[in-house]
Length: 497
Ligand SMILES: Cc1cc2nc3c(=O)[nH]c(=O)nc-3n(C[C@H](O)[C@H](O)[C@H](O)COP(=O)(O)OP(=O)(O)OC[C@H]3O[C@@H](n4cnc5c(N)ncnc54)[C@H](O)[C@@H]3O)c2cc1C
Image (cartoon, rainbow, N blue to C red; front, top):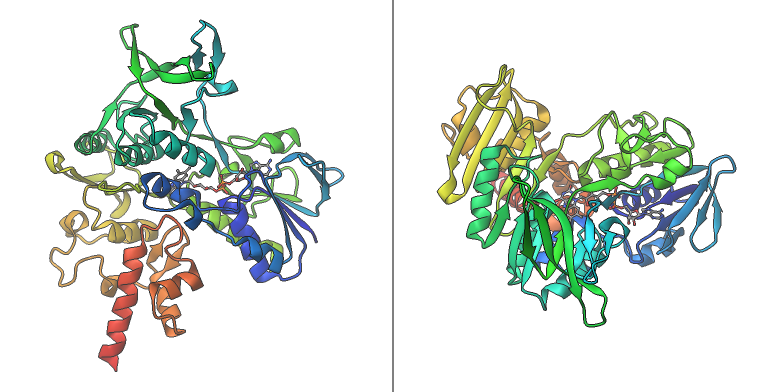
């Protein structure tokens, strides 16, 4: 069997390494449109914030491909698929046969179809190309361009107050820019937060020097002539609710307006596509059994995921299926837990967060102290946690995540869900009280039990455990929990001795 993977991002690269770990021989060719080796896209926010370096976020060492006899074509996009002949054609003119084709083409940043007003009075659509100074935030190249611009400009606007927009804004204000987030919805991060949570977040941003404007409909990009005469962005035009217009000046415009699954190849090849490429529990295209799809480009049971944990779970399931190591492996869906990666803003959100305390059939606990930037909310249905927001203080995030993940029965004493530790000798999140089944690293689906097993196999540091399990190598938010567990296991060992 020969396998061709299209897309060498977070899902594609994980599939290739997992596949090789299970099958040393199967011929694998992987095409990646981006020129560099695969990298941890999640950490671009940290690169923008200056807390990670671009050369430290690589996922697979280029030499690994050679050692493992994987044919990697970096910087070579696939341009078409001939399903009947089972061939893929790439931009370098090559034609490669496959027996199994895996599409892992991810998403592209959504650019709203707004006009770009040129200084000479002409107009073009943003979809056909952004003027200098206006950028999306999806790739390492975008990130490096934003950092380069941030060295010389003073005012930035970020269009879009979702997770990535907030992370971008935090990174830019940390680089000394005046930053305003323009958000179309009535509150920030409306997919993860309820209106109260959004209000508290806006106050937290304001304290950090980040302005935010809500119900802000950007309707055009303004430009001035640059040094070479080509248009350079000078701000954005807002359509006001009263029908008026307002111009917000900016030297840098970061567009963070969401993503769209990259399905053009699949669609042109006649595969069934909804929002993403439609796949079953074996990640198989519903149209063609020889084609699989994983990551952000696929749609599984009506869900298109925008987080890495499901993409990596799909990669593992598919590696098991293609290598034949686990023929019964299936992807049946994943829970989504979001954590913001922005200095001085602690935020975790999961599940159904929008219910208020009048909603039928749910119990809602809430605590707000907006002057200190704290907001906590827990939503319970049938005695189980179905949603939570923790803003400003995420000390109970570990416990809530476990309860949410496992749909475990909740203690009748509810306050500890918000504040932890109450009524118990141990704080709720300590390793001692964590069951072995509790997931510690969500990106890589690593449980406390697996970490304990690593310890028993001889791992003695968090880095040893990370090497064996990959725990802590996704978004990195579990690293302190991982270190806590490893040091607790060490203490246990010395007590037992
Ligand atoms: C700044 C930022 C921060 C994020 N933070 C988080 C976070 O905290 N937590 C989280 O879970 N997720 C986060 N995400 C989302 C996460 O990065 C994605 O869920 C993940 O990258 C999805 O992996 P993927 O392989 O499906 O797509 P991608 O990583 O986008 O990879 C797809 C690859 O396919 C390539 N490709 C596309 N078409 C072709 C073609 N025709 N031929 C060859 N190659 C092609 C693309 O160039 C790309 O390299 C973040 C994303 C960004 C941009």
